[in-house]
Length: 187
Image (cartoon, rainbow, N blue to C red; front, top):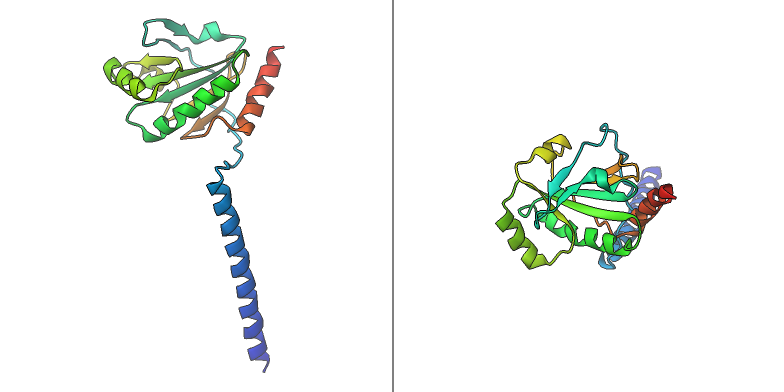
């Protein structure tokens, strides 16, 4: 008799657990369907000092990271063949647009691709972000980029404070708050 009761309780417990799992799955599914993005916490950079970065953009203008001191800067390494990079770039542009008029800039660094290929890609996606060309991958190696996309968030003093490897929606409230905190250091 006690064996039967134990099985009955275990079965009821399993049913309750199954109901909870189903409810959690439905809620997570609804969150995903609503476009909700879980808040992300950017990892703190522990990889050493910021390396120099001086590259020309597609128009031939030299961009030297040292000239951006006093601004919060996002440096994003990407390539046209990298699907996660392609998905991420529009969110970087939305972040830049949201910070317009503030001491903030996004610099994208295309890694080791020819100018015609990059221009062809940009003609399709119509990005307005500055695109710097790391023609031979020297900047990628100096910054120790091991995968793409790789993004670094620099404080107004030019030091890398945060980084992220992989695709991320950069136009989300948690990122805005992080940027705002860094911007407050310019005052």
